[in-house]
Image 1 (tube, rainbow, N blue to C red):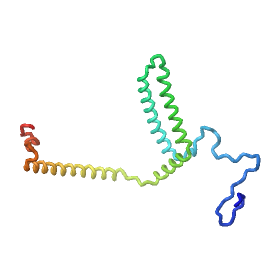
Image 2 (cartoon, rainbow, N blue to C red):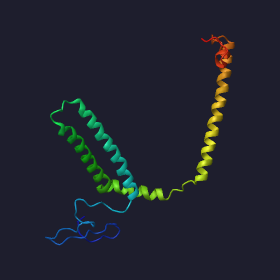
Image 3 (cartoon, helix red, strand yellow):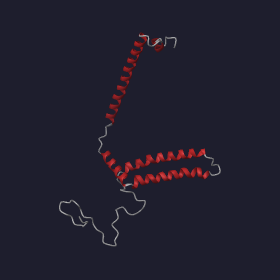
Image 4 (cartoon, rainbow, N blue to C red):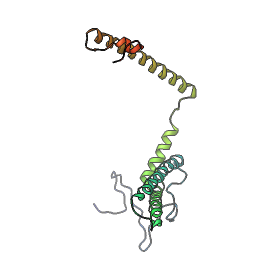
Length: 178
């Protein structure tokens, strides 16, 4: 099959627009600046949140590198002790920019994530408080039940002479100790 610009019936192929000879193909929208953000304004909350979270981790990583620099004898080269962590921060911030601002796959994922989060039916404050109360009461009830079952097992094992201590005395403070 030849690579012509005509669409054959039933093939489902759409012809590509050919550029005239000597002309450059059309550029994507958004300009040619190396600092442009891919799809600015879309997925802004997720992108800013991701950048802030990774930025905090990056600063913590640079702090770790700074503290590890103390292992080396750099008394005469104090600038190295500060230059290396600053370089780490700058490099990590550049990677954050590349992934969160420029990488089409990551940006499209974040835009889709924000879109899906807007569709979530969030619980009301009253529902959250009610569910929290149920969890706390259930946890306390289960703890009380397990406490009494544990006491029953300890009494049973003491009665069978498997436990060789004065269990009741030790629990309630009337025993001599172990």
